Length: 109
Length: 118
Image (cartoon, rainbow over the protein chains, first blue to last red):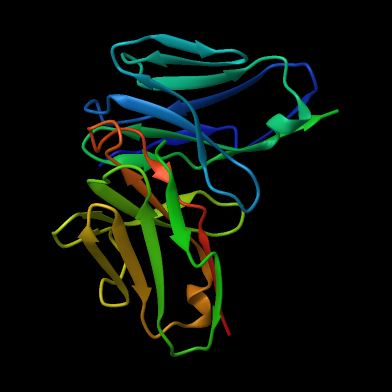
């Protein structure tokens, strides 16, 4: 089955700096890669996603890149703000839907 | 669009009793619904996947007789925790897919149910 690894598990950045979270997957059949943001005690919210026919996608301060050959994809948050502090999960979907282990991001004002 | 509700949001029950959690897709037909369990500061652990009208597929290590899942319609799935014990205390989250017409994409999550077993 699929194995999604996510790094780092915790990340602290100064407000205004960039944050990068990386995920790798093992199943070559995976073709959809969403990222979710989960604030404490709340539901995961889809923030951006990318499909396998695209290498990069951007939405304001958030971008995702995908390298299908290397089987890894990354989330980039620029100009971070304190409200970006949350746990971020990557996921890979093909025949199954698997989540990464999560990254706790703290943006220090 | 793509709103998923979950009820109840928080439940406290005594050990040995059963608890039912409902998951509803409010504005789309969910061809597939997923049930997750989440411990504090940990990732979502997939418990089972259910398709409307068919039996749920459980992940390895999840007791199907303890966690009963029913997906009776395209907008409703239920999870019943039978004979609950304190170790079943957790945050249970459902999600639904199918809003885009493809169940492999775009899972939308319910707000979660916090279960406390005393």
